[in-house]
Figure 1 (cartoon, one colour):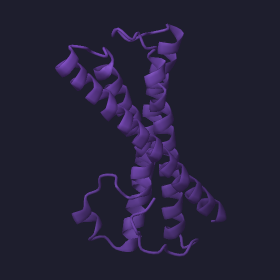
Figure 2: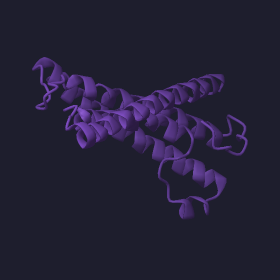
Figure 3: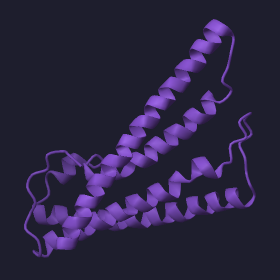
Figure 4: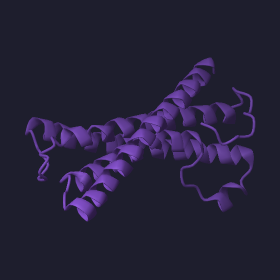
Length: 177
C-alpha cells in the first residue's frame, strides 16, 4: 500500500500543478478576449485569433483540470444515492465506477490520439487566419484522458484495498486534492 500512497501524493501534486497551469491559461484567455473587445470597440481593430485561441485555451483548461476534479471528489456523482450506501457498498461502487472510468478514458485517449496523429501526419491547420497546426491544441486531449485514466486506476486500487481490508480507512475528505 506504500505504492498507492506514493502515487496518490504524486497525483495530488501533479493535479495542483496542472490546475495552476490552467489558471494561467484562464487569465490569458480573459486578456485575449478583453483585448479583442476593446480593440473592436475603441480602435476598429481585431486580433483575428481571439475566438479561435479562446476555444483552444478552454479545451486545455478543461483537460488540465480533470485529474484535479477526480482527486478532489468534484466529478459528478448522484449524492442522494451514494450517501445512503454502506461504506463497504460505496467502495464497491467506487471500484466499479473506476473500471468504467478507466475504460472510457482508454477509448477517449485512443480516439483523440488518432485525431492528433492524423493532424500531425497531414499537417492539418486551422482554417482561421492564424493557420495554427491542429496537433498543438489537440495534444492535450490524449494526455488529459490518459492522466484521468491513471487517476481512476489509483482510485480503484485504493478503494479495492479498502474493500479487502488491506489498508486502513482514510480520514474524512477535507476537499483538498
